[in-house]
Length: 149
Image (tube, rainbow, N blue to C red; front, side, top):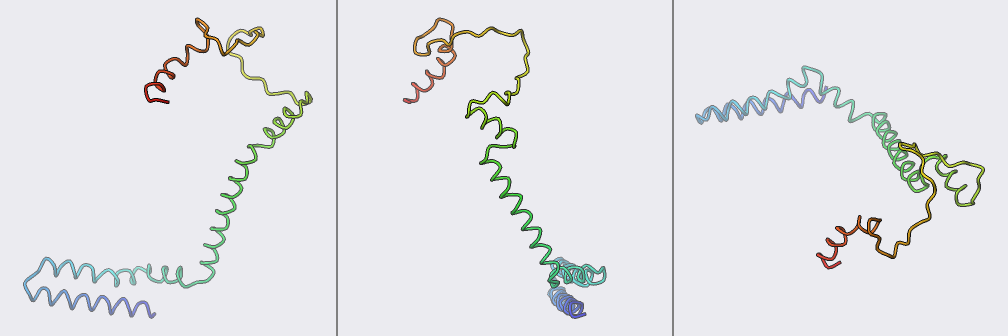
């Protein structure tokens, strides 16, 4: 009830200012002022003002916003904690088994695309091979040398 009265008073004041502006022969500005001053009355007539006042002045609505904020905070904290712990429970279990050296939990097999290879001894990384791993990084080394790194 009070909000309806306030909106009606604001609209009446705006229409009064629009009439004074039109009296000064500034009709375009007067029409704009009249348009802005009719908005509060239109909002009261559609019921939007009552909805907004119920939203703003009810403590249960603010308690609901607090519960939603708490929920979002819990989601954020648990997401951050899961990121620090290493992901899913299965991944942590496999990492712990690998650290202990247990063979009880087999490592997941990587999907094989081509034929299976036999185990080869690792190459000496310190020497330059004619077609090995060192050539793959030659362009990167050139870029780093260019920038003085």
